[in-house]
Structure formats: structure tokens, C-alpha cells
Length: 156
Image: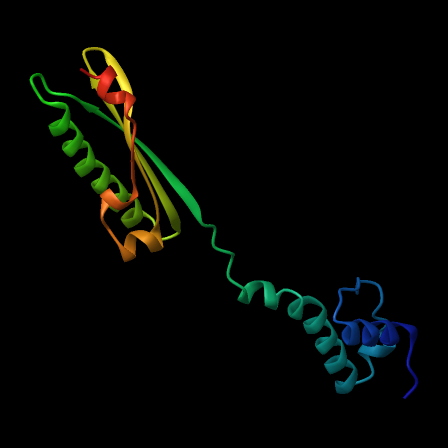
């Protein structure tokens, strides 16, 4: 059977798995060619329109990992020693890290900063910066904590 230019374009599109504008390319003789012509056209349409979108439909979107930053303000109680305030800050920082990881499975790192307030002054007291894998291996806030020594002098 001799190929018409329209069937040749469709076959090339099927072989190359690419999209070719089909409207206006299907002449009457192909449609009248019987079952074989209709099957070829149906196959060409399916491949041109369906196969190109199928891989995109099957591939899940890429996961985006990110860091969560959390600043927590903690007011120092009257008469509270700095060491007691520091222990309370560590406990709250641990809870902040754990809550951050529990709230989102895509989060790869948590950074929690405790900002202490005393007599109208506010200053960073400590920061915990830890990755999820490190936290799962060792969920001890003391292993990942960084203290700011100036806080002791500025938060009497």
C-alpha cells in the first residue's frame, strides 16, 4: 500500500515519539482505508498524545528538603539564677527541635535559637543546630548546642 504524505508524517512522529500537529493531516482516503488505517491513526494519536505525557504522570515530584529555623523567646523569672534559666532554655530548645522534626518529614535540619528576656533586655542565649540524621542518632540537645557567653553578662 502506497503511503500518502500524511501517513508518512504520522509514522515518522510515531517512530520519533514526538508531537506533530495532526489536525489537517488526516485526508479522507486514510479514514476510508478501512480498519487498518483507523488503527494506525488511533495508534499514532495515542503515541503522539499519550506516551509523551505518561512518564510525566508516573514520575513523582522531587522532594524538597529544607532547614527549619525557630526563634523562641523565654522570659527570665524574677529571682531565677542564670544557671536555672539556662537549664530551662535547654529543655525548651530540645522540645523545639523535636517538634520541628515531628511536624514535617521533609525537614532535614532544625535550628532553634532561644532568646532570653530579662529586665527589658533581650539576647540570644543558645542555639541548637542539628540535622535529622544526627538527631535520630543522638537526640541529646547538649551534643548540638552552642552557648552565647555574652548572655551571662547582659542578662543579670
